[in-house]
Image (cartoon, rainbow, N blue to C red; front, side):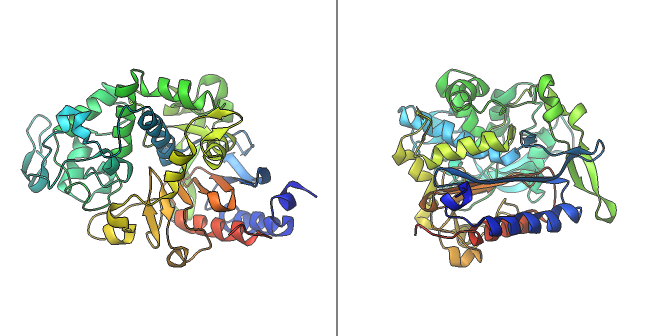
Length: 418
């Protein structure tokens, strides 16, 4: 009996998964290459690669390839924050201004536009928020913050003008917080869900409360102990031969080079260590992170979180147990997931009603994806973790491929625990 059978999965159906994902996404030219890891019931049930990691150099994708994981950095940052919660250094119900005094009294945008001149003051009129921002608002994206790339409101226009969240911000996380302290909120905290720089603020909190830089904390307390040796805020020179190039859709549906692995901005450490989207990693490293969470916060004898804290990642923390579909329509236009049947936990989406997602799944499974079409999910009830890696920004196939991957993985089950 092989590992797939021991994990309650069909090798024949896993072969179908590989064939469909390769034909539909690699052979079609939608993605240059893909890597899939499936871990279940303590077994590495399945691993596969297809395609290339560098189109220009015709370099096949290898199982130790390094990828920009973008927003899959967020769950790692969330775990780092919860480590400090466990140490009593902050709580989810704390007002953020208790730890970042400059956030006290942040107003909510009422009217006005950003100044047209670089040195001019933004012409904003604000009104008081209905309550202060809390740490739980940061972890659930209900803080009133936003992202500049939304191109939706005058507030995100001000983010773009000031370069809020730019990885080359000279003052790093300190300057980032100063920028936010002088801009209005998009809405009162807790009243809507909007994808935002909230997780980067969490990275700042980890830095401030730990007394280490954010990167030092991750390395010494999380990545190092878990032996996630290829996960960092840049790809060093001695690993660039394993770094994947990144692409984006171009004219005629063909992929065009977005970031050449051999001349990448990720070859040097950034000035701002972005917990919301700055890490590079491998599928194997990220699977170790997932296995730690599946293990109730412990992997190979190394405890990162308590089992009770790890279990919170499978709970919906949105106000009044609302779903994203209840909180998004008037505000958010971008997410790494569809909204149906989905809540939000600690830096992750969480499935609450599988019927509304229209794909197989389990209540309490949590997940997220990255801008370059990467994805993962953890299903504690089924003792399952899946990691998917590729490198295409702005792919129209992003949500479809995650839907297909979920369907095909669950279709390969020969037994279920629930």
